[in-house]
Amino acid sequence: PRTPVTVTVTGAAGQIGYALLFRIASGQLLGPDTPVRLKLLEITPALKAAEGTAMEIDDCAFPLLTGIDISDDPNVAFDGANVALLVGARPRTKGMERGDLLEANGGIFKPQGRAINDHAADDIKVLVVGNPANTNALIARAAAPDVPAERFTAMTRLDHNRALTQLSKKTGAPLSDITRLTIWGNHSATQYPDIFHAEIAGKNAAEVVNDETWLAEEFIPTVAKRGAAVIEVRGASSAASAANAAIDHVHTWVNGTPEGDWTSMAVPSDGSYGVPEGLISSFPVTTEDGAYEIVQGLELNAFSRTRIDASVAELAEEREAVRGLGLL
Ligand code: NAX
Image 1: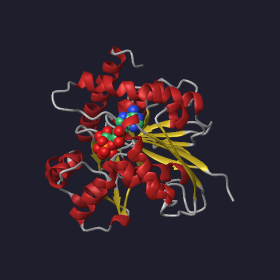
Image 2 (image 1 turned 60 degrees about the vertical axis):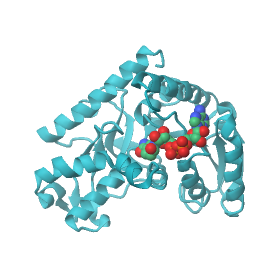
Image 3 (image 1 turned 90 degrees about the vertical axis):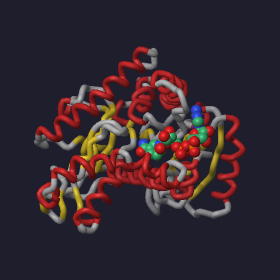
């Protein structure tokens, strides 16, 4: 039997946590041959609720699960972590300015980054889900100077999956025929879902669609505002779909992208496509043997360039703001 992989999940008592933990414990995150040890991090008042979730996980008798620990101390929760899913965050509440939001999240992600730096396993992989995800990942990364920067990623896979479905509905093509879709930039309303390099059964997706009005006025806003639309209809924010995307993100990172395809991950920029170095921005990436690479050499038309630049400018502003708060 293989050694268990330690997976730390923060915000474990929240709604994404509830949709996520059972799937991790059942083997969907790392595969059917990998035993898992779960470590849950919550704030003190939510420890009891996390305990309740852990009771239910126990009651599933998942054969791959070797144990669950719960803590309100990041130094304990990240001890020995191989994978960290940072889901818990401070949501924007009424009347909160962006600066307040970034500062409140700095208070969460800076100590968590430090704890990862000091206690996680050498092969730690971090996915930040909690919003503002890209900038929270930036804050955590900055607090973990001993961890290779590329291990800090943020989630745009939900946006990617949303875009896949919208494109499938528009064209009638099965999802399995769609490849090479990309989300660029920030996980926010400025994100840019790009179909100019996407393929539908090997044909260029933008040419198959052949409808720039749909692209600009329906597809892009539908994908970018999908989170708000779900809240409006469901009365609560995306949870199971977000958990599903987190599973997809880590599963792809660990197990690789299929030949000829790529996925979208927000990763520290190496300067590719003019994205300033260090910003955690979404790119097309391929993965293999637990490592990822930004897809190189894509030509960006003016339509794409403008939108990518706008989203990256927003990320740069967020970075300036957190720098101003002393969080970097
Ligand atoms: P919930 O409010 O249901 O749960 C959040 C949990 O985090 C709570 O149980 C809270 O006690 C815990 N928490 C807060 N501070 C913590 C800390 N310092 N350490 C550990 N736990 C802490 O929110 P939920 O719906 O689960 O969403 C979680 C986060 O995901 C939010 O920030 C949300 O904005 C973000 N999302 C990100 C998405 C993405 O695509 N990147 C999409 C879905 C989601 O909106």
